[in-house]
Length: 412
Image (cartoon, rainbow, N blue to C red):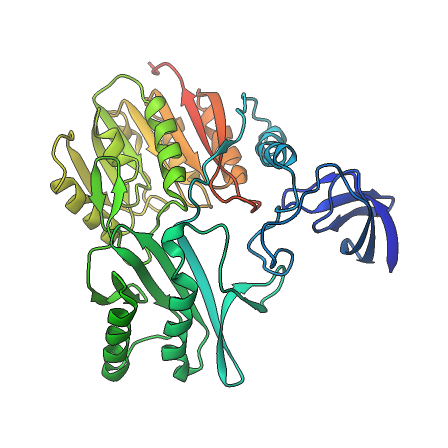
């Protein structure tokens, strides 16, 4: 049904929300205060016309905006955008009954995202490479993306050539490309094992494209140069497809917030440590135990530590912290615990921390909901949430990260 609507507020995903008598209607790409015409189906509205635009509406920077699903907020003026992202954190904490000061949003986009995943699908005779369309599994071909770092300028063309070479199997592919100090680092998923003929062809293509490293499902096909990343004083080669913060400035910003919150002390635990973005920086001041379930990430961290002079000791432990969180007697010897779990949070570990004698906990989160849940556990265990800082390294998306600092006196 075609309706004229007035937008009341922004939702968590950036949709304009109309509070209608029958319930909320979500209209993508509409802004608060705007009068719009939309085709309404249930609780969803498809924007047809902006009758009276908001003063906070600006022109998008990309011609694919609203078609490509990668960005949700290119139409928001900076002031509205910053407050929308900050308010996501404020609202989520409030709903969980968590009271804490929330700082202004910190812009950590920097030069742009250093990692991107292209999807490749066969359509007729051609392999189409691009990003998923908004709210769809359809592909939008992409020749360039304005939110990517300059080091990824060649990434769309490289992804297309790799997809063309892999397309004979007619399988959907995900091609993850990361900008490194040595050039492009590529990990492909979806094809399955490679035969000798295809492996040789891909090795030759990696030479032609001047890739630093090419991998298939995490298995290295060819490494022409180590794809090194700066992490504090260290240079580290993450494992193929391994986790890496989205932007260089994002990693630096999160790490600076972590190190600024470190207490005086000798020993720190870095849980869900990845390949060490926080461990290396903490080790400039304290001894570190880095714990992570990914063995390859732990090996990369250990190798980086061995090649970096001037740091205090970093020990590593490969351990699944969801199934085997550090227990109270293991935690109590640390002056501070830093944790950066995946989107699911760290529920099991938070319970053990709440029962421990650890005085300071610094929690880096990529999901405000799981952070709020774990924060409630820590607060119930005697911690005070000193403050939360939201960080934006996924510009124009609905995604926001944060750093929360918990402190308390020792028990007993």
